[in-house]
Image 1 (spheres, helix red, strand yellow):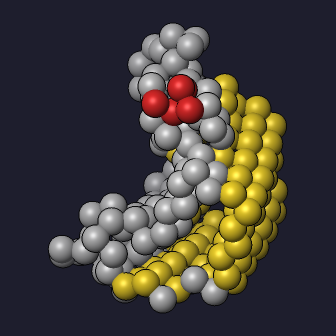
Image 2 (cartoon, helix red, strand yellow):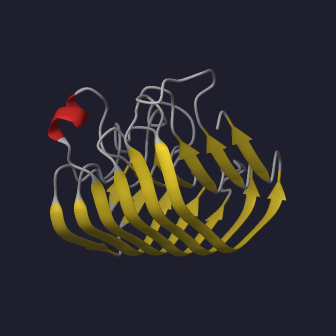
Image 3 (cartoon, helix red, strand yellow):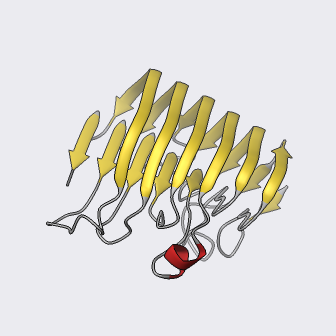
Length: 196
């Protein structure tokens, strides 16, 4: 059990073959413990799983990352073979790819996830891709399946570069499947695509 982390609750970086089960992470939505209280952020790691867990926080519930450029380009270590299954996200910012993706991301599965508001605060969103200009690399073979969400700001948000971006700086996205997703009580857009 993790309570009111000063920053991200759990962040395996450059790790391999790790399994997390029954993680309980809790932080408040306002006050001194609110800033960047992500729940679970694997970065440049492979063969990682998070299962049967509950995350109550004020930022990303789960965010898959692979580092910022230029260091991530020189390391060239992707995040890959990651399974997120049977997780409840309360009041969080949902399931995110990015925004640090410069090392590449591949073979990610989000299965059987529940997302909802908590303590009078809606979730910021359900499914998010955050791929700002300049990060480059790739995101491929991603599956979101059996995701339910309620009381959220957005359903599915694909946010790319806000302005024109060079081919080298653009993240290449390929083979993303979003299947059997039910989102209710959406304050904003059900499906938003920005900058692709």
